[in-house]
Amino acid sequence: MNKKTDLRVLRTKQFIRKAFYELIQEKGYEGITIQDIADRAMINRNTFYLHYQNKPDLLETCMDELLSELKDAVVLCPISMSPFSISLLETVMQTVLEHISHNNTFYYAMLIEENRIYQFRVKMENIIKDKLNEGKDLVQEHSHLAISKELRLEYLVSAFMGIVIWWIKNDQPLPADEASSQFSRLVTYGHLKVAGIPVEE
Image 1 (cartoon, rainbow, N blue to C red):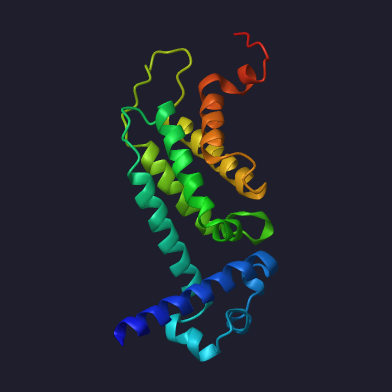
Image 2: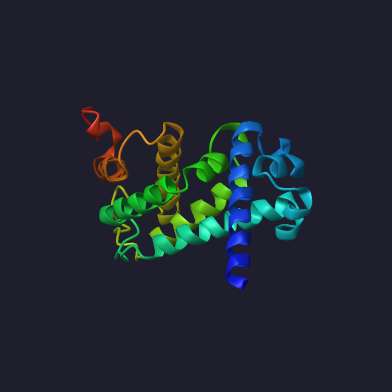
């Protein structure tokens, strides 16, 4: 009996979240009402309130659960000696894109266009930044190309998120492994070199 009840609860929550993600894409978070969610999920309002206090509670729960899954996946990526390791960047990118591909509706709702949820992006960036920041900074301070670690990390995370958003927005135009490989080549050789533009110092 308990097992049947648990399955019913799980299924109801899935219906609510699916409806919520779809409605965010269609109307934006602010434009959605609890009644909209209930109608789309084919439940009544009382059933919604059995599971969530209100709309912000639903949003927070959805974000926390999915970002927790993402963090668990990213944490499993091998630790590198340097936060700027090309193999680490490629592995983390592929891990993130593969996770997104299994939860595309949610990520689209959270990150794309005018309907995006700003705090979701900030939390996602912090997961990526924490992973890339695990290693030691091996750059020689006396190098004429030396740039502060903080600036480099910010640049990488911004570029990383730019690729992620482009990938989602354009309906995953490249396989996750190919997009990750191309991203790592951009970081390795720089955008000028990969475009065939000579670089003069």
